[in-house]
Each structure stands twice: as C-alpha cells, then as structure tokens.
Length: 279
Image (cartoon, rainbow, N blue to C red):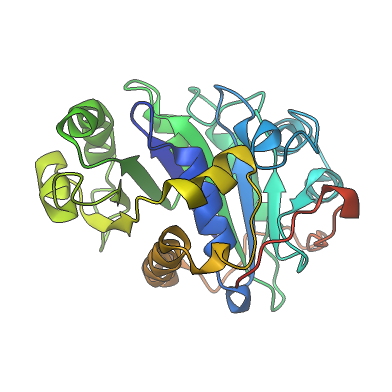
C-alpha cells in the first residue's frame, strides 16, 4: 500500500481538484484507489463534485475516529466515484485533520486497508493547505507528499513556506525523494522545471490548465465522453504513471494488515455513484 498526501500552499490551484483528477485517472489495472477528503477547511468534494449526494463528514471521519472495525466503517461510508467500484471516496471534512499535531497514528491506520491477497490499495489524502508548523503528523503518515502550485510569481511566492516544510521533512536516509512538486498550468508564465528549481523540490510533473474540465471536478458540472479526453485528464494520467513508478520501490512484501482483518469490499450506494468515462 502507498499513502500519498496532496497539499497546496494558498488558494487555487487546489489540492482537492488535483486529488480528484488523480483518483479518476488512476488505472483500473493498478488495484483500488481510495481518495480521502481530509481538508479541514471544508467538504468541497461532497458539496462540489458529488453535488450534496453524501452528507458532510460521513466518510473521512470513519477513518480518523473508528476505534475498531475500521474496514467495516470505511466500507459503510465510502462512495464509489465510478461504476467499477475500484475508485472510492471518503468525503470530508475529517474531525482529525492529518496536519494536526499528534494525528499521525489515526491516519496510519489507513494501512489496514491493505491485505495479504492479490488486491492492492493506493490512498490519496487531500489535506488542503499545508500550515507552516503542522507538517510533522502528515509527513509521518504519508509515503509520498505532493505540493500543488501554479506557475505564476504569486503562486510560487505563496508556496515557499510549504516547500520549506517539505524539504526539512525529507527522510535523511531515503534512497529517492519523498516530497514532490506538481505544477498546474505550466508556462503561465513560467516553465514547470523553473518553478521546481526555485522552490527546491523535485518536479513530479504538471497538470494542464483546463477550466472546463476542472469545473466538472470542482463544481460537479456535467461530464460526457469528452471529459476523459480533456487535456486535464490526459495530464493527470501521466502524473499517476509517475506516482506509480515512485511508489513501486516503497512497497514492502510484508503487509501490515492484521491477520484477522478482511479486505475492504468495494461497494457503495448506487444513488451516490457518479459515472466517469475513462480508465
């Protein structure tokens, strides 16, 4: 299992839209993906993409507050993002934001979703803005952390404090970087590699600036067959490929799942499902 935290520095582009794009672009042959809306600022996915089809706090709270039977709690609260049931969402906000000091143990329990069977899990955690002094809990629980920023001078300036937090938290003995930069809207006006160099973080990739497709993710605008072919989703697919390459060396052959635990069953109320064309 790999836990990937997605955070932003200030304002748009946001971690929530980016996280959802990555979850929807995650290839179906790569196992199940769980998106957790843990942004303490609000339940944007519940009110935006899902158009209020699920109650705020009904999902992510199951992960952070469940004392036992975590898998059952997650199964009862997860919403399927598509008809396959392999892309799931725990809506927010979480009562215990992963950026809060001392929250790492609760969020580390996400790893109990993994199993000793053939099914593999990737967990994407949308943590929203990364406060300058609250990175330790998040970074302790995540295998990879992705900072999302734009390419304007204002966006780069806003991202500097968060980038400093991530640089300081880079594991000393890691064979490869664990903290990465994702640029939304490359060359608006600066190239992504220049932005990454300025912030001192390795470049994961870039997402296309695509307001029409982004509106589907942020506000639940109608999506048709065109959506999977948009520049945003094509670029998101490329970024998921890069994340999978980075995650592969981190996967341990030994699963931390408790011996008496059972894998999460990927199902959700049909009334809460949104169909997304693409794989």
